[in-house]
Amino acid sequence: MSEHLSSREISEWATGTRSQEAENHLHKCAECREELTLLHGTLSDFRDSLRSWSTAEGVPPRLVWLRESPHRTHRVRWALVAMAMMMLVAIPVYRAREQRRLMDTSAEDAVLLEQIDANVSRTVPATMEPLTRLVSWSSTNPAATTKSLTKR
Amino acid sequence: MEPLAASGFLTGFASEAVELDDFDAVVRLHWPAVFRFALASVRDSDAAETLTQDCFLHAWRGRGRFRGESTVKTWIMRIAVNLVRDHSRNRRLQFWKRTTAQALDIQTAGERLADEQISSEARILREERIRAVWHVSASLPEQQRTAFLLRFVEDMELLEIAAAMGLKEGTVKVHLFRAVQTLRERLGGAQ
Image (cartoon, rainbow over all chains, first blue to last red; front, side, top):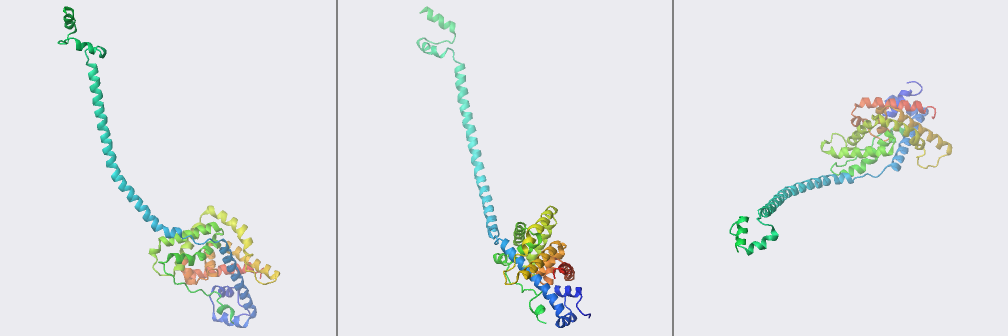
């Protein structure tokens, strides 16, 4: 081995690749030992500064989503099942109500049409209807009725 | 020679045995590491927070596929690595990444040291070195930066990093070696 560890040997030692030869040299050579100690110190300081920084910047773990996610999934599933059940019940009820409404409407229409037919088929206007009760109304022929009224 | 090998330098932490069933505990335990990794990668706390949340959401949804072939941390970091990579490939966000990396983070990064009893001169030198590492990590190619952050910030073992990045251990070693070489070249003046 030369007088001191080579740059390569120092880097190898620092990364954990250590030969017996290098170790023997380090026992004897204060200069190489000092260089490695300084490197060690610098790396330790870097680690400490990073740890300090990350502690200052770091937020506490947010575990809420981790704990709640299975329950939340269950809740969503239950909500979907409940919604499906509600739809299964609501659809027939809605259909029945709609059918009833249609039937009511058609019954009302029928009554209205009957009233219209009745009005249209009158022989005399509604205001003259009391007169028809005073005379015999054997015929629907207005001329014949007039004649019988004249004879009297 | 005591300091380097025995002091914990470059040795990984034992992975925590956390049951995936207790997902709240998994989030509490790994959230800081994922957020840190995302923050160092994208240099934007809002984006990092979103990525971290996405990471745990993916993990939650995919927890049934976790076979225990790696540690929970490695598995979660793999999700984080993929999310950060996808985020970084969004060209629209690249602009903001560059902007924030230059403006906010690096300027203040060196000031985030623990308040230790050291001289002003030593403190300034130390802050300069930290800023240099920030600059280097920002300028590294994506895979080198990821390997670098997982190794030197998250203290992950090479095999864990390989699993998290979906690479071979040898490839991770190469990325790390190049990242450290670049860093040492950049620190040359500072040191």
